[in-house]
Length: 569
Image (cartoon, rainbow, N blue to C red; front, top):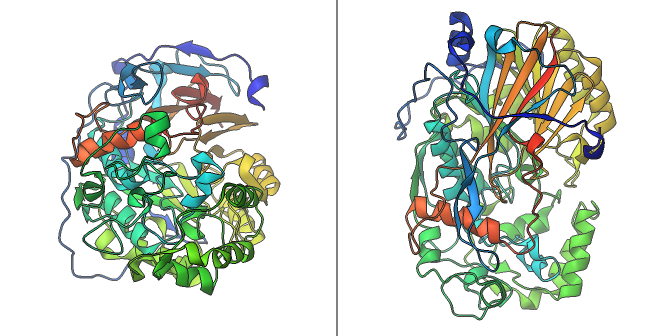
């Protein structure tokens, strides 16, 4: 159903639920465990990793205790980042929260449902964190001359932003609608930006806990576009009369570049977490299947910083239309501009990862954190090069994580026949379960196998929700008997994650509660605050002010904090 044809939503302000909505003892125990067991292709418990010497325990935050009643604290029900001033570069401050909207597109809301409600699942979705090595030689910053939003001024702080989101999730007191303990977190792809070993290690450490130095190349200095002297990019420490400062009023922040590559520590999530792959995790720049030339360039000493506007615009259009997925035109462009390339420090940690290497990184005991081992990926997946799996969320609730990336290149979604057959078997075998399907790409971004996937989910009444990302925009749509929930990214404004709670209302209906959360960073840090928290705050502020940013990514009220009704079975 298109946005314009959706029925009007009935809005209600978020209310704390009374004692009659508390968890049943069994429900609370099932959710609190959060021990979703990864299942293999046949749906049986996967083999565990061989015992290994325990790595040093990463620092962790105290595990929050679920309150007796639900609390909206720390969520966008209470407050959201809001701009100060009317024009130019705008600082942020605390703004009004977003109300919860009841949507009855698939089922009517019973008046007594809150009195009978039992919680089936409570968890957090993160998506499109785009942890970025901003000094990587294969980045496409030079496309900004043809498309302003092709480069983001906030990208150097992506690790700080993710760590701050981890801190926020750890601080939540439970599901804001039900009070149920959060059982797990799941990422829905584009965890990294360049399909790069270093980025994958930073992402895994941020999620599982430990120290991160978000720097490649020269260990002592930054070697990227932000001290290049080119007016195309924001130069936070001066040295160039750049466009972002002259035209948009971007600030001067002395010490920014050293602070951006300085070591910081992530507490790691205190709940189990699962990983879903996205096109940026699997492909060069999220689009190119690559080859030897691009792999060599990734770890080498040459980097292109600028390109004429017409050439940049033409290449941007080629990528957006899904062309040149093997990189022939890109290689031709890079070779034609080789004399414009600058010298950087080579680094083998920038090497691209194969599918097997990406899965193997998750299986490394150093990144187990609160578990599960492999975060959904198993030894069998590693051997087969398979990045889709199912896992047990709770009694009666199954999770399915899909791989919608195209191994032949292209940033659009792709679903092959073998995975469709596997999914058909899983949905059939678990016909008595409520099934939550996770993928990177939403239905509107699937160009290969998309209609088949949508039809398959529509044939199985046990599918409750399809949860995804990729578009960097909040959007919630009904599909027959289930809801498709698409969540905005954590790299572009408004930088969100989403808490999702599934309940049985005891009246023949189910409810999916969705609640957006921002990171723990202060809305407005003190100018010049280069602490990790201050940089995470600046990360949010720069994203809001990024030239060319979309103003529609937060979605409408019915795409954010909601109660989504659907029929039970």
